[in-house]
Length: 174
Image 1 (cartoon, helix red, strand yellow):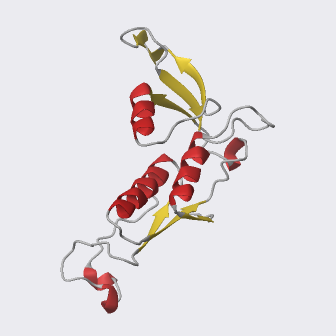
Image 2: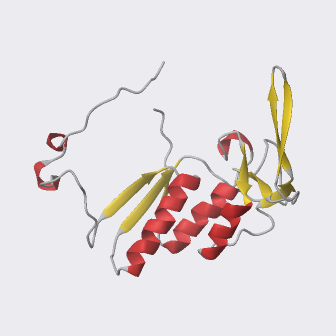
């Protein structure tokens, strides 16, 4: 059951002074953007939006709202999951100047294994290299102290902040 109501948002839902003649919103100098969530999607969006704005000399403000503390282990610092990133993503990030340090990628993986009720199937990388990286989305499992691994999400959020995004720790209960 979906706890969220679907609602159609129209221009009449906004104060008159913020309505636009068309349904398309345009960024202009002084625009303020709020990003809900500082995980990979929110951090990447913020980073690349600020990068694009800088390239065209557009002065905007981006604020990221995130409830998790990616410096903490366990559920307070992540969404209770690990992450897998492809070599292609690592290469694309490097091309954009975002180089993942060795304490972010914990290990290389040479294959995926898909388990079903009728058996398992191993999916290997084409040239048998360890080109798939495993990462923690926070600082690791609960009870982890002073580990040598850092959070992938925290690394990306810090990159967005260094690019100029503001950060606000905000907890919410939908």
